[in-house]
Image (cartoon, rainbow, N blue to C red):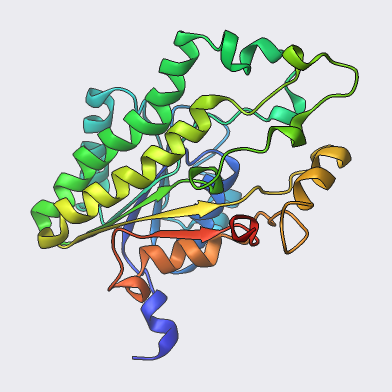
Length: 275
């Protein structure tokens, strides 16, 4: 076998939750580029024109976009039924979906401050980022375990390892109790995903299902200059990630290149957690 062959995903069906989002689509492109069949699962799929030339070129002719509410077990079960109907199998699950407000553009600080953070928002964020990952793992992972082989990749964050440095979100002229902050739920969800990873990895080890996490750092998407400067000062490489810089890691974790790896958290953060 050539070294490059261990990254080959030819014919493998890969379900990507939050598949309509920025990184979800990049995960799909990476999977398709390695010969896999991405199924982009999202509660919003209107902008993914499955029959278009662009969709086929980006994700492959056999790719699909499937609407699912990952907070609802019945909806996740229907997702599995649809995947099995279309492809006859599911090989890989990437739990990518999460609520992630762009704090540098958030005008309503009441949404973010711990003292005023609403229980409804807490429930909503945990439902998508954590309960959704649990339900998808439970339903699709059980099918992989039944078949005796599969891979689950949980998308965590560098904030699963460190607390958010709230100074990077500060706005000039606002009193302390009105300063925007990264919501508590983001850290809680991402930290819990690493714990879920270890649990599932050991639970299904004898069933041939490998489970790992990836903890990426922030991606540069034309954020305000002052925010970028503050954040990059915390990163040894001195910059945010490009949108395509997690594709290699995703392929590694999904493919046989990581065949002896389970229960691990792959940190790719430009060195931020090294300081």
